[in-house]
Length: 483
Image (cartoon, rainbow, N blue to C red):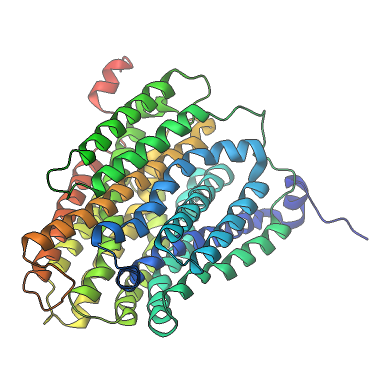
């Protein structure tokens, strides 16, 4: 009886040159589940708001709690890979995602549901950087853009199909059903892991201690900042400002601590590299705009335009397919063209999409709404490969895992701020426009959404300005490095 291969060398010998693609495909399956978990809930926000009697301030925590938990988890992924290897880390994260999804679907109160969304966020924070780390380690520079493009093709199909499937499930089977969608993906990921991921991992190195102090500081800072932002609409209350102030202090303490500690959770010295610094800035602003708008759009379609959940989900399906088609083409372009113009062009398409969506009314054609969203998703497809490559270009190979995790960390941090502030801003504008409930006939309803979308467009436009410097060394850094 032949023994199944267990080491990286044995698996490479069995599968040959295609093995790196098989590994990428394996880790993509779990990541697809994580992306689906992050987006499928958005289409159910109006239904969940009615079920649990939630204001917009509380409802936005369905997405924000996921992102808040995901942010510290992203920073831990390189340590987990180094300590436990790819296989064990990947399996554990998939099991956590499936378990928390099942419990979330069975939740009887909002607090338990939010806790399970946070647990899903932890699992997804571990899963999402893994394919990018695999690409940077297994593929040569001339292949990396193509690999990221194909990875994007697979990954975006999940959030593309997620809202459409979620809308159908919410309409016909209730909100609980959407939490069970990730289970088939998780089971498939575990089955593929047994075949293609080595038991003895090349990722395992000399065991280094986890930076627990840094992890606590960044977790406390994130939770306090987002709780403070979520409570900003409390008239005359000092509590939000106290939370924000302490959160900022904790974030500053985290950065100062990470600079001094020998084995940091996040290597702050990476920000001394010009491309990484600019790429991180773009990622934060880009995350703010895209996550905020992804949360806001299904709520707008159902609350203001009175679309059913399935109609709202179908608006996002062509956009997701357009994104999936764009990714491989953009990946090939990223291998041969400078990243800055690609990212700038993609961001401008996203801004255009947000501005056009802001002017949608109840008389707008269904096809027009779909078209405006498609424009934004094409922009995202152009941005992702070029930004991923441009951010880490020129970094030493030993820094790639940290750099990819830090880039995801910054993007998700921006996304958490985007979702939180989108909910707060919408609630504020609804109040100022005289909308005291979710009555779609209220004259100020669409105006409040228009103002919120335009705010997200303005923030996203700042990413285009920053992206113009991607690939250049900022003057201050050139001087400090004697260049």
